[in-house]
Amino acid sequence: MDLSIYDIIKGPVISDKAYKLNQRFKKLALRVHPEANKPMVKEALEKLFNVKVEKINIVTRQGKNKKVRGRATTTNYTKRAIITLADGYSLDLMDQSGSHVVPADATKE
Image (tube, rainbow, N blue to C red; front, side, top):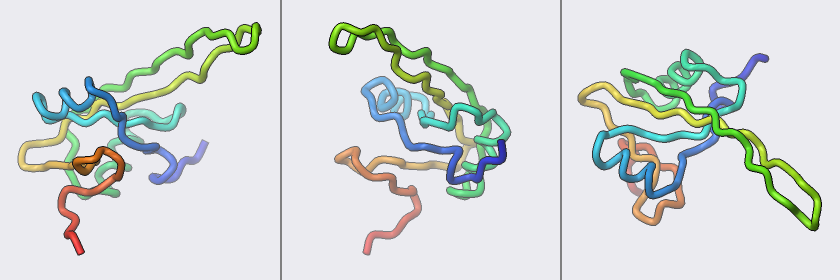
């Protein structure tokens, strides 16, 4: 499948664990396309945000079994990428409210 760099990165993971990971270890947690691999994610990040990626770990989370109106269903699988940026690079994907995607070097107008 031919994915564009805009299709690969779905958005940031907004959770307490992802926030602590960012604060303590300077790592980012992103939701990515289910068919994306490490080289694709690295290329997309470097082109979109002009940062240098040092390391990528990809985690595929299995869907959960649930019951909806008495019927058994399964939620979708999700794929997440844990990104470690090289020294000297930073990327802030959430403003303080945690609702917008904002590059670190963006100027406020």
